[in-house]
Image (cartoon, rainbow, N blue to C red; front, side, top):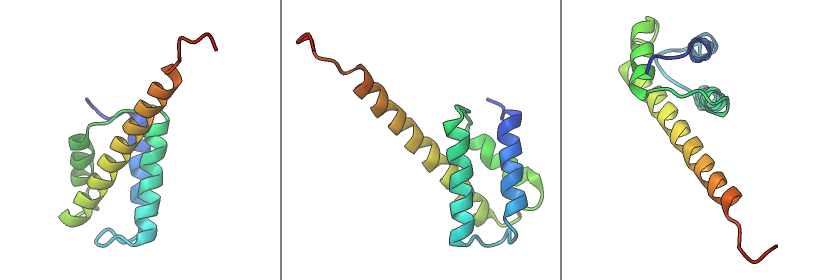
Length: 100
């Protein structure tokens, strides 16, 4: 599944906001987590391999460990969002037949 333009805009935001592309600070990781959280909350789906490929081909992310960390964050945020959505769907549809 190719990345949506709105997702690419958010990935560019990561590239713009993170100054040191060779080492992420805890603040950098928080920014990245928040951006992927926003992507997921907006209902945009992405393939983790596409995220990895985008950062690899973007040009300024030369450190493979940093690219892997970003990919891991994106995967974690996506999985977390899917689990939260699944739990909401179960609780929203959970009704008793007792007439209440």
